View (spheres, rainbow, N blue to C red):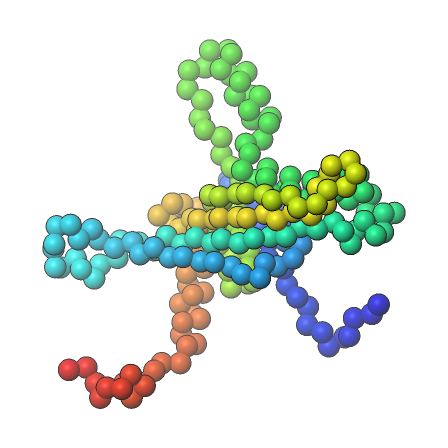
Length: 219
C-alpha cells in the first residue's frame, strides 16, 4: 500500500546512548509506538526558607529537578505475519527490544568480570562503573540528558515458546542538569541547549494584558 505523498512524516521518540567521555554514539533506540501521554514534573530549587531570611525569598539555587514518565508499547504481532522478513521476532519475540532498553541500566558484564578479577587480585578500591550518557529525545526541542530512575515491564502476550510478543515498558527518567554534570561536560552542554530552547519558546508565547485578568494594573 502506498502512502499519500502529502502525509507528514511522524517522528518517533527514543533514547540515544553516548560514550560519556568521547561523546560517540553507542546506540539509538527508537520507540516502536509513541506513547499517548508524557508526564512531566518540575520541582523548584529554591533557597531553604527555614531561616526566614526575607532577602532570600525569591532566590533560585539552580534549575528545577525535572522528571519524565511514559509507557512504551512493544508489539511483534505485525512482524509475525511476515515471518520470512522478521526472523528475530519469530525466534525470540520482543526480547531484543526489551533487552536494548533494560541493558541501559546494567553495567556491562565485561566490566563486572574485570572488577571481580581486580578484587580477586587484591585491589582494595575499585571505582564504580560509569554508564553511557543517556539522552531522551522527544522532538528537536527536547534532547535532554537523563538518568533512568524507574523501569518496569508488563509482558502481555507470549508465543508457543513463551517468548514475549507484546509488552509495555514504564520508564521514569530524571533530567540531569548542570548541577549534576557541570558546564564542561557534553551532558551539561546539552542541558543548557535544552533550557535555552525553553526560553526561546517562552518568547513565542503571546503576553497577556491586565484587562485579561480583570484588573487595571498592579496596586
